[in-house]
Image 1 (cartoon, rainbow, N blue to C red):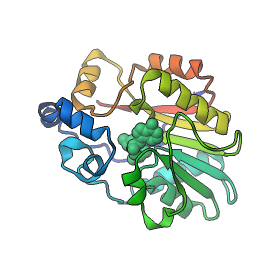
Image 2 (cartoon, protein in one colour; image 1 turned 90 degrees about the vertical axis):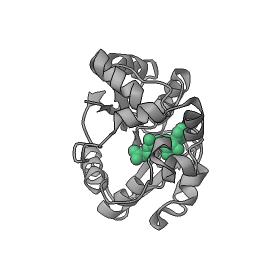
Image 3 (tube, rainbow, N blue to C red; image 1 turned 30 degrees about the horizontal axis):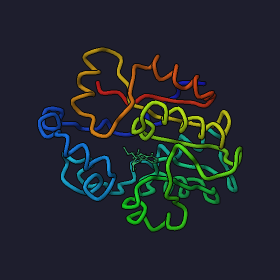
Length: 218
Ligand SMILES: C[S@@+](CC[C@H](N)C(=O)[O-])C[C@H]1O[C@@H](n2cnc3c(N)ncnc32)[C@H](O)[C@@H]1O
């Protein structure tokens, strides 16, 4: 397992922690966890407040292709692909790559970018419907946190099964109690999160040998 920041090229997100903290009620959290229109394209308190393609993942896709040495004909899967933005960018930066996505949200998949139609699967990260060892890389960005710990372990095991040693998982973490407090104010859908050591323990329980990095609230 190796810590590697493949999202280094993304802009630092602007987050209004106080506003989120005030608006977060059990009803809002329950609606967000449906991963429907409200989460992606409803008001900001329910999630993204408008999840639109803006090309920001193009350099991330380039870094992923370089990191894994991907080439035309290789298969890559994005677990928690939402509307397929990263899948689209992987197809653009590496012509001939067989890029696919999987997400639990029917809303996201039926509102995907047109380049990804037919490439995105409706499913759950805990049981990936693909044969073992058939992907040259499996990516999962900010998705595993949405599962309870036992399911998160199953999901990480699934990623390892499809692409042994060739996963990249980005998860929410914090390095201090103050950062943890700020994270708890912001977070809507997450069910499992931890300090880096807790994540590493979980990865090792899942037999994970791929790479990882942290989404941190500074
Ligand atoms: C924070 S979004 C991240 C989307 C995208 N990976 C990105 O980084 O922009 C989390 C995604 O995980 C999906 N998701 C939540 N639970 C899931 C599950 N059990 N299996 C697959 N996808 C799931 C949601 O529908 C949503 O698209």
